[in-house]
Image 1 (tube, helix red, strand yellow):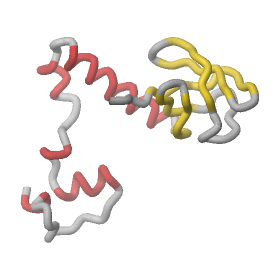
Image 2 (tube, helix red, strand yellow):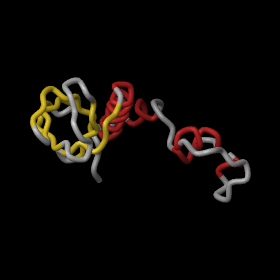
Image 3 (cartoon, one colour):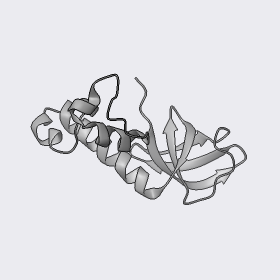
Length: 113
C-alpha cells in the first residue's frame, strides 16, 4: 500500500522541489504536476508529486493520516469517532463523497441504507 502525503513546496529547481510535510523535508519530482512555486501544496507518493492540492485538502489528508496513526497505535476507539467507512454511508453521502449523482435505485443496494 502506498499513501500520499501532503507536502508544501519550500523551493524549486528544474523538475524538482524541496517540500516539507509529515516526515520532514525532502526533494520531490514534479514532472507529473508541472511547474510549482513555493507555498504550493502537493500530494506526494514515494518522493514524486502526483497531484496539486489546496491547503484545505492537505489539512484533510493530514487529519486522516493522524486517525490512521492512532488506529495503528492502538487508539482505534478514539480514531473511529473521526470518520465513517464508505460502507456505513448512505447513498446520498457516498455520492457526495465521490462526486457522483445519487441514484435511489442503485444496483449495489447502497440506496437502501
